[in-house]
Image 1: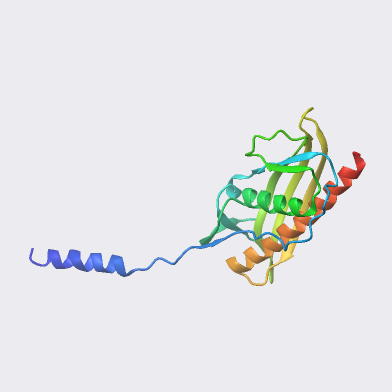
Image 2 (image 1 turned 90 degrees about the vertical axis):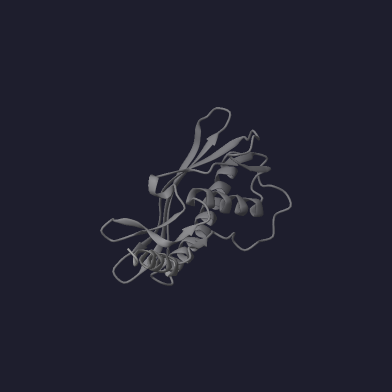
Length: 198
């Protein structure tokens, strides 16, 4: 009986000494600022929604994808928000800088817009192959007429960017590059639609 207190003290000390690794949190930084145009290319207003995503992409986990199709989260790394929310903010920033629309708003705003940009996020992974890895995005955008609720156009984007390393940090860098390229292609697509609807 005399040894029990010492036993419990030893257990407590052992439990306190085991350090849990710190969790690294990442975000998708905005692209480099470009000179904004003085006048918008369109008189239309646009709302950008946060987008729908499959279950595994509806959390802050940074997910990697193996060649056999298996997915899993990195244990000690995560996003600062869900991928859909990060993509929405990055796209809004790019749209502001390119001055495509007379006004822009996120879906959380109560502003009534002419057009709504919806999205379905199907893939946002650090994808591994035999000797390399990349940042892989598969997303479909729909441009909706807010008044009639009818789709004006739909486009699927599949983007990949090579990863500088085969770890979470490398995956984040690759996914940032893929997001910037996604924004570039989406803005080109929207610019074409603006010209066609004038």
